[in-house]
Length: 270
Ligand SMILES: [Zn+2]
Image (cartoon, rainbow, N blue to C red):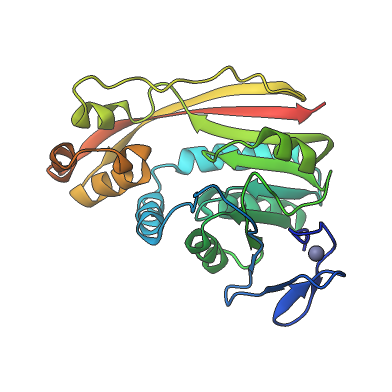
């Protein structure tokens, strides 16, 4: 296991039921085989709740984001050395982590993939999906990981803690990030809002990194029933801040053709 003690940064020694550092900080092993390494104030952030995890699982299970997962795993293969180790930082319910881990496992015969998320419900879901992935409940702004630990770090739609991401990468290691593109889910927003806005894509330049690849990925998805439309809506940030009257517009849809628009960036730690 590549996670360290979140209190002192010491190596964690694993036994049947817990992980303990040399200073005696101890963390119970959950039934799913992961450790809760979340300490201190998380600033009121708890991550996705169970309802959101279930909506995400149902939607992603429909394969609508499979083209993105497939492209990310190709990039992970190309930018992770044989036998190398990869971290998914803020992995959610592990849809991408699982597909990437299987691609590395197919290539190498072994894999060394770790993932964390701040939501316990999400981490439990990853543990059900793929027991080979090493898991912890932890936050992006205080990763329980030693300096220079990973060959590759992945971030898909999770808040970017730039300093921490850079710190846990080896020198010359790769950082793969996917974010929503300008037109992502514009059609869904058009249903809810009178004047929908395009997503703002920030300047991809990151301090301490060299940008190697800036790749757009755009395609149409066809949601064929009201449940799929609702699940997609529940995955978006709009679900939190939409008035009931606007929400009813979503509930009333029995299908929707929608733009999926992503940007994939690949960086090298310099
Ligand atoms: Zn400790």
